[in-house]
Length: 219
Image (cartoon, rainbow, N blue to C red; front, side, top):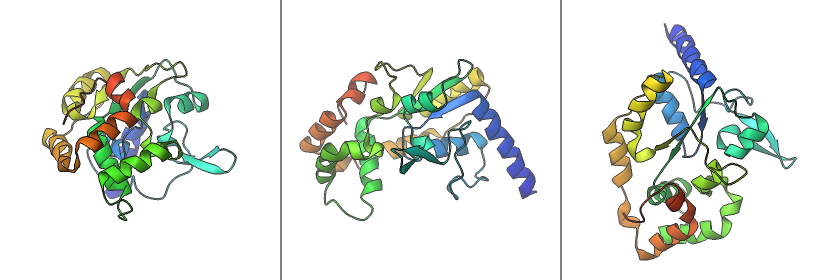
């Protein structure tokens, strides 16, 4: 039974990949969306990294600078275009997030070993070293084309995913669903970490995200 289920969901994911590019922008969000779409956590998304799969933009192994390797799901829009092209028969979809909430998520993820004492310490480090960590790049840096424009067919907001999915479902003929309470709980946690200094740093580092994606500079 389990083998049949795995085969079924592999076919479902393949069908999705043939219709749609997921342009990754949030830590673990692409994996989460794939799990939600498939409705069952049957496939081991976090298992051993596969060889690069250009059709689905997944896996490790794309040479960069002659030595390092790049996870395909962390490529920018421009890198995807250079490697694979964006076929006019495909729909492009990406998800953006309130920069303030995204920074808090980044802080907890990258500070697992308590390298920074406070959020402000982390932000000061990010400000100086952001070019060295693509995970910290702005969402605009990931999504703009070579001319600096955003040409994504469906640009979804993380805070409105349940509503956005209800629109995508009929248009792309893909089953999409997300529990609204799950999104709300994730967004309101840990805002007590913020103070005037951290808000100023967030705006300075991610000013483009506030402006381009029309996010308010408030909590």
